[in-house]
Image 1: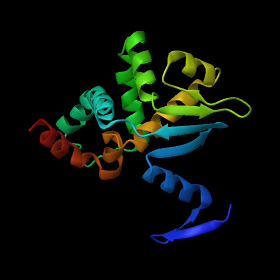
Image 2 (image 1 turned 45 degrees about the horizontal axis):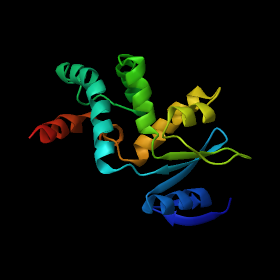
Image 3 (image 1 turned 180 degrees about the horizontal axis):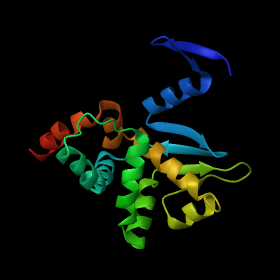
Length: 171
């Protein structure tokens, strides 16, 4: 891949430029584990409902850190995912399945040699992800990142921004 541009001193590859262009149009094309995914932006309310669910799952962990006075503690993506896993584990099988389907409802998958498959149903998800369970989680993270879920703001802005953000949400 050739180098195409220079943004803030960082040269971009053709793939990065294409991802930026597609994000402007509300579409992100991402290849994960040999599968090409077209991630469309969620309607705002759908994203907000799912984002709220993620925040609620993490509230006890983040709240514990706030009580301990650890506002300066680094909260990186690994920590967030570890904390999120306990919240996801508390969901019933039906709730978890619904969560995954809703999270992937605006995604299509193109596997080489096969027609594109919508992931808006259990059948579509089962067809694409046979023996690729880890790929589901990688894709969910990309969907959350592309749709601007709050957890990525926490990673970028630090935990110190969390109390103010929650306080502002509660007004």
